[in-house]
Image (cartoon, rainbow, N blue to C red; front, side, top):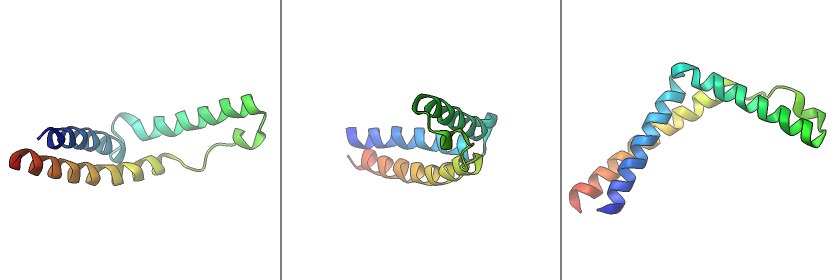
Length: 88
């Protein structure tokens, strides 16, 4: 029963974050892409690797794609957690 509840909670969190990324609520995917480029610039300054100063080719579309994978996986986790909780 505890495993079912844990899966239900993790699935709910995954559905929340997946939908936020997939539908770009509050510009989350855009902010994630900007954060990635900022992190690459900091790493470039630390390591003196000039190839990292170029913006990443993984734009907001990549984070929206990840949200598209996370959302159905979270729904599957919720379903498995619900089944385990009800039967256990």
